[in-house]
Amino acid sequence: MFKVTIPRCDLVMIGGSAGSIDVLLSMLPALKPGFKGVVVLVLHRKRYDDAVLASLFTEKAKFPVKEAEEKEPLKPGAVYLAPADYHLLIEKDHSFSLDYSEKIHYCRPSIDVSFESAADVFGSRMAAILLSGANADGVDGLKAVKSKGGYTIVQSPDFAVVDYMPKQALQHAPVDKIMHEHETTQLLNMLLHG
Image 1 (cartoon, rainbow, N blue to C red):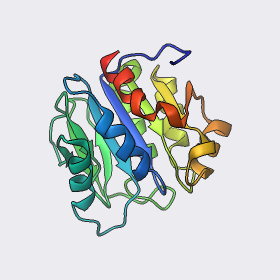
Image 2: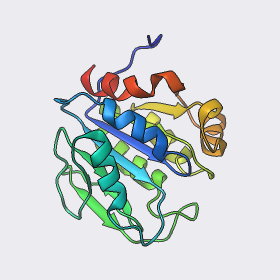
Image 3: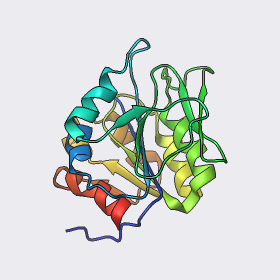
């Protein structure tokens, strides 16, 4: 049982790097159908990754997880994955934009870029979750989300495969909740169903 109030959100963005896929393979299958919000996954991937990751998530989750496309409108009840080697931004008209500008923290897609653009559009109606990883990407994004009234969550370093990214977030960003291992299968439902 959660001891803090978890807000229902229209957008949940999840960022992660090394060690984050296993967490998502636990979270996504537990998501109950009928949610009205949008889930966007921003994961550090190799430049030439194909659609294998989206297929893996789709197979395990039992619902479609698709790569976001340029100018595609965000559809309520859908789960999107940032394409490899592009920054993924959210536009004011609630569509995706793909960007090939310089890497941030040696990464493209950058979690910071996605979180910051989404915060400008969704403000207090979004949550950002930062998972396992080996650099500081996501810290500035969490700051942006919080500054616009959004809800910020960081995976507990105690069960992260690579704890550097969660530790950086806990040291430098405002964090509303630390996600512990036993909460991974409940958290998305709390955020999207209330």
